[in-house]
Length: 160
Ligand code: HEM
Image (cartoon, rainbow, N blue to C red; front, side, top):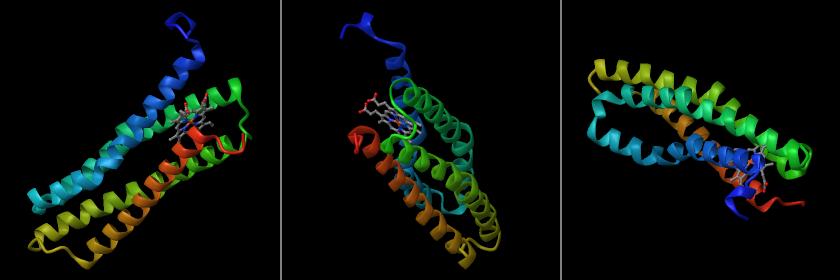
């Protein structure tokens, strides 16, 4: 295919994939960012959790919205929304939106408050902080797993 044959569909597909990279790429880097932050700034973990909230609001959620809108366009143009690989990925994306809004962002907000409270009380991480931290790790890992499943469904298109 030459550049001139590029269709609007191809452009939307490019936007869709770019938005996937922007939305989820940074999340795969969180384990490294977090452990570096914990090592170099143990007294300021509130800043780490506020960074997560900021990235969620300014980068991840807007990019996921672009993934959704572009994906729906692609599906309606050449496929069907009830094709199993599309319906399953749509469900996954909705679950990720839910996890992000109902669990991950509120947990990071709470972690920021707890980190500030613990820092003011001498710096030792409290049981409350560790409990919320575990929750963030479990649900964060679940969200990453769902992204991997979504990428598999989109590329392998099982059931086609
Ligand atoms: C977590 C969410 C999603 C991820 C990670 C994702 C990822 C991808 C990737 C990597 C591709 C390129 C596949 C290829 O060219 O082989 C793709 C294509 C596509 N995606 Fe998604 N997507 C997501 C959500 C959605 C949603 C919600 C829809 C529709 C409602 C959708 C519809 C499509 C369609 C129709 C294609 C084009 C397939 C083709 O023309 O070969 N995607 N997606």
